[in-house]
Length: 68
Image (tube, rainbow, N blue to C red; front, side, top):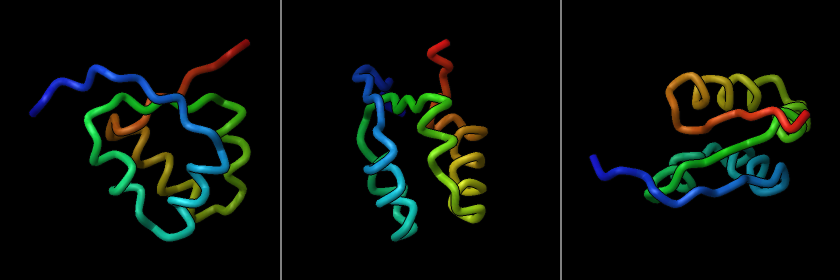
């Protein structure tokens, strides 16, 4: 597997759009590290979408960070 070098901080708007069409795979297919903040995570209000996102975080596809 190719090492992921680029870092992408994902906006809630973009993330939610990919979640709505159930295609996070298109986003994470690129060789980048994807970071979301706690605030972005909280903006995902749809329970099914949030569960998909939580699974992606647990699988290491996204890194959740706190900006406190």
